[in-house]
Picture 1 (spheres, rainbow, N blue to C red):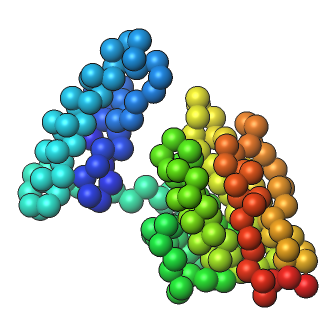
Picture 2 (cartoon, rainbow, N blue to C red; picture 1 turned 90 degrees about the horizontal axis):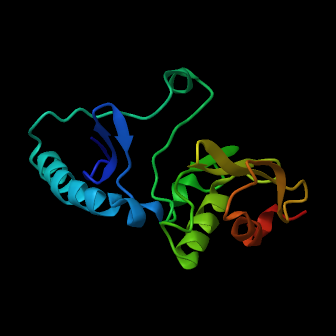
Length: 180
């Protein structure tokens, strides 16, 4: 089982097959809803206890490409995007927010708060932001760039139709000091 640091399930491996802990609409018809609920309750609870106690066969894994980790000009940061981190403001030329900003997990108010924080972390005109998620075997997302005049985000490219929250990102106000 793969969990986050708190022990919340991210993925199960059942006889070499990946089983996701979250439900899908098809689960109602196939009965997988009950299987997922049982796995989450039994295994998820057990994982959380083991992580808290520090026992069991727990191995921390950083889900970062070794090539990216070795790049001297790349900085990887862990952050709660729903809480403003002043030390991150105007610090990044490129931000990748993947598999987090989607309407399946968060309501519009939470998404707007996270997006406002992310935009504040960009360095300004010319900086890039990628919002993406995995869906049906492809990466669905939108690549944005802060416009040259610093007044809005431009859509640079869309992958597999673009992000489902692209419209919210385009409505996110940019810092006033960027405007030329």
